[in-house]
Amino acid sequence: MSNAWKILAVACCLALPGWGLADEEDPDAAAAHVRHALMELMGWNITPLGAMASGDRPYDADKAATQAQRLSALGNMISDAFERNTSGADIRTEALDAIWQNPDDFAGKAQAMLDAAAAYAAATGDGEAAAKVAFARLGKACKSCHEEYKSE
Image (cartoon, rainbow, N blue to C red; front, side, top):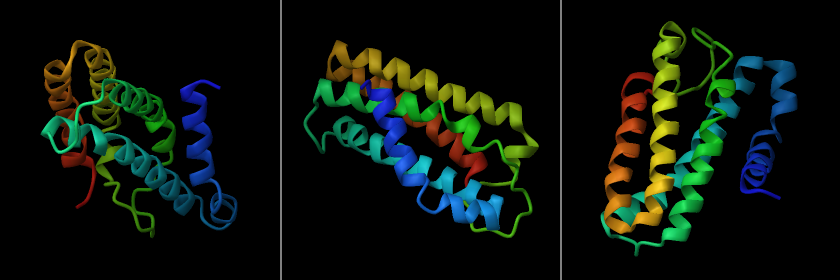
């Protein structure tokens, strides 16, 4: 089983347990649940990369490449996860209404994250210094989206 399929299987296992019930009762809540699960998985995969980039964890090229591949697979789910417009819905979410007010910008920022994750994956084979430079780009891509589209 390829890494992408493994990641998809894990994402489904995390997202689906409450999805069926929530979907019947409140599709907005179900959408928020899926988005939250996706972002949690992305955070779980980027955290070790940040620790390696800051020197808090020894650099491991194989682990870094695996985490980057996972981020790419998960990042490809962003457009689906944010497809449902929950603007004004009475749900608990960190997703700001601006996502659906500026869909092209949001999609562009998601693509920038995918591009940065791919560049990071490529850089992992070029050594720790190259990976650190690529990680800075990846972190900037994530931050750019969160600053505009995530409530704190």
